[in-house]
Length: 640
Image (cartoon, rainbow, N blue to C red; front, side, top):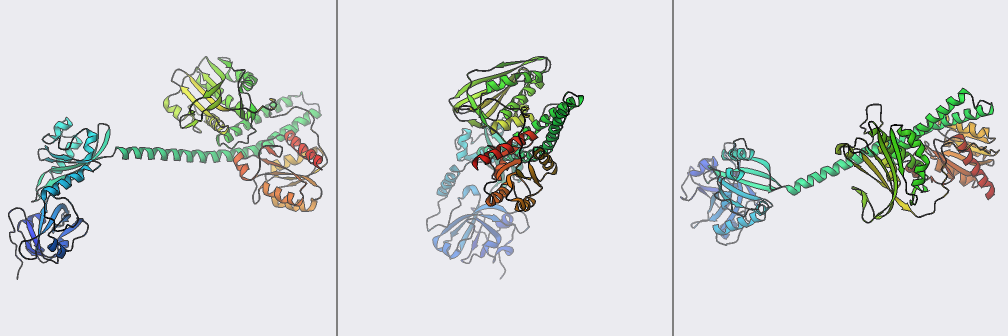
């Protein structure tokens, strides 16, 4: 018998399914709605014609025939291959027989619910449940007719827009927007929906970020009768995205700074080796001229210029290590007012004749714990930066003062805790800084100077040095009004040691040598040769070795005679600390002097302490090495 279509009622197109879920009757109107004829539908399972969305699975049809009703949301799958359409569905038990009636209706008329018991179908109850669900939405939902007049509005998100549910019913969208421009994006999206094309757009209303999803609103016959929109408040999501982007940028910047810091530290190490060799040979030449009566010759003047250039190069490596925060430090209690007064004459020569340098130092200034050479370099960098900011004539003021912080202060992103601090400030009457420049001021290699006039490391090294000493730096500046750099360092209450601060080359007192045997280990040939000649000229018996392996072999031959081990820290295959441990395990009386051009954290990772008499930092001059060696050997003799 051929399948036939039958009319099942006048209140909407319907179909019947049996207890197995197969279509048994088909309303002619469904051929237009579903795009399937009776011949294509009758006898097929309902799941082949519709896709269950909510709930995601079909109910047991035999159970529904007993309980009486089931409501859900499905997607229509047209036979002609068109895109599926979402709609509501209700299965109800018929009055005659075991068939179930299939009724399709717009989503606005049905609430998705789980399989029910034998409770009677109540459209009003379903609508109220649907509206209650909308009230818990983070956004809101609304419908408009083809004239774009609101026909409904509901949802928790309306409160953020200062609206009540249903308040806009009867109002036209164009009046709400205040424009009738055909190119206005929200209007274009709604007109697309009226043409059957879903769309979406973003908007901002009363400071809230909103995303709108607009879909066609169809009647039971599939005709577009309006549009249904969902507005979702994404303000918090946008804020979270912005915060995530900021954190990502901070991480990227930190990784970049770390990478450049590693590069700077490695470059500084290589330079320190070169400078040790250059400094040493210049010092040896200086001593030779003094012995041969050439101290007042033209060559001595050239030598002095070369020494000054080497000192400048050593200063550059200190900047690199300060930026990478790996400089070998010798912190001690110092008074910044005394430090400023001590180098004021040098600073006056740096700024030149057209700029007046003033110092306003508090004589009762508290002490801080810092490396004096590093703080001198910080002050020099800030004064040079102030000088370069002044176009013609101007003034640079250096000031020191005590400060008590009652609340966290200093850098906004890394505030200092409340407490007592010493402030060192450098103020200039120069051009000032824009907000853009000030934001990047301490980035390495960032400079506003012309090519060849600045390295971009000066302020970066200042920042690293201040951080290294537990302080903070702030900048106040406006274009045309000059700049003020303030450094805050924590007060230290310990009594200061001797205030005498030695410069790179010590006084010309004679260096005492000896006849002890020294095991010298250095993997840089030029440094090894310099140290060998320096110690040998002082009368020592030196055993030079270019690697830890060679040193162990040499130690095996001369173990009973060796009194001092002088070793580099970072070497291939075995570091200096490991070598010293093996040597002193066999000969506990052997003293050890470590040397390195690496920064403090690299050296500390090798297990070597940077403070005290057992470490000498590169670059060093022959006299500095001689003094360290003699002190350790004398100390060993006193212990014996």
